Image (cartoon, rainbow, N blue to C red):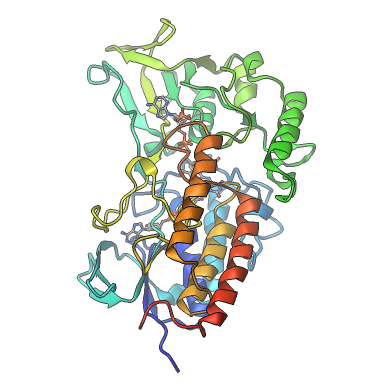
Length: 447
Ligand SMILES: Cc1cc2nc3c(=O)[nH]c(=O)nc-3n(C[C@H](O)[C@H](O)[C@H](O)COP(=O)(O)OP(=O)(O)OC[C@H]3O[C@@H](n4cnc5c(N)ncnc54)[C@H](O)[C@@H]3O)c2cc1C
Ligand SMILES: NC(=O)c1ccc[n+]([C@@H]2O[C@H](COP(=O)([O-])OP(=O)(O)OC[C@H]3O[C@@H](n4cnc5c(N)ncnc54)[C@H](OP(=O)(O)O)[C@@H]3O)[C@@H](O)[C@H]2O)c1
């Protein structure tokens, strides 16, 4: 029998554990290294790895049914939008249910993964181990390396209050915002949650934004909003028009709340979901503002010339995609941009695969599960990639469509539509299975 390639998985968050399961199911020899003492990555509040962006009030903003792995439903007792502690417990239950815990080397950080001349990967860890693998699965997450405003706002260095990035907000100190004047910058989901948290204890909360966003409620027509998505077989433009019309009827224009009217259509930016922010604005507990222009020692001035006293500024300005263990000359994502075939396969570097490195309009977990099974099938010779030229053309077409549709921003470099991605991936897998059969199920990497 042909020996399967050996594999190294970096990370045991919800993406990495899905890969561990797919490799285990197919009988691969592999190591999975996880920096923390447990699985779950970002969803482990106060994670010992120091990388988690979770704060005390965090809940899923993708609904339970759309977030769970296909082969392991979340407990029926869970609410539609579970708390981070429930999500972390679910990932723990997943590894125990499938006997995966012993397959993971905990408290082991990969410090270097170097591609050798023969295409294999030399992986070193902080524990001093060094081993060579035929293939590398990268599942180190993309929401742990904070992106601060670039360039910093004028005056940031003389501001006497506290400036922090949303990544470092934990919500574990109820006194942190108490009686303070707080400026929260951004219109993504971090900004919504943190402004709402602050609004219950702060003296004032200002929500500053350089552009508006459509704020989606968690429920529409009594159902989690993400369960109302129409079939991907209906053209996107029609789906979008229907959803936008529904939102206009049920929520109304953002301007009515004092927020800037979005300069784009619905689903042309990563969705901002909040049940609470519009209500807190309506109650006068959060005041919308345009972008920050500059900071003085004790104030923040906005681009419309207004100025407020400020004790705390929270930059909810997103994240950088980085791989500290890879040679940046070989693979990097400048401005978060790393072109990949269907967000998994590198077009020029073989033997490396990315899991969970995408921004779905929907949840990441079921997509990471599908990607993992796809990679494992590929490594087992059951799926063959299209020819390089076809792969590049596919990447280019996908990127052209994405950049055309989305607002130009470093946060919109790897957006996918959840249902469309699943459908397209299934179709591509069927095509690749036929190619693999024609090639006699040859292994893509010689073990
Ligand atoms: C505040 C917030 C809320 C979110 N809410 C949702 C949501 O509701 N629904 C949704 O689908 N997505 C959400 N996301 C997106 C989030 O990225 C995913 O939910 C999910 O955490 C991605 O899992 P992951 O395994 O890819 O990455 P992570 O959860 O970041 O896990 C990566 C793992 O890799 C390990 N690791 C990293 N580097 C190394 C190394 N060098 N060596 C060894 N181990 C390493 C880390 O310790 C970690 O355990 C949210 C993101 C943020 C910031
Ligand atoms: N489950 C949850 O409830 C939850 C909570 C938090 C986060 N999340 C997820 O975590 C991920 C990251 O979300 P995020 O909100 O932290 O980041 P994000 O989605 O990248 O949003 C960043 C925001 O900051 C703005 N921004 C960036 N740089 C700026 C600058 N220099 N000046 C002014 N504004 C600037 C962006 O505006 P532009 O659009 O103009 O670039 C955008 O509004 C997303 O996938 C999100 O869905 C989920």
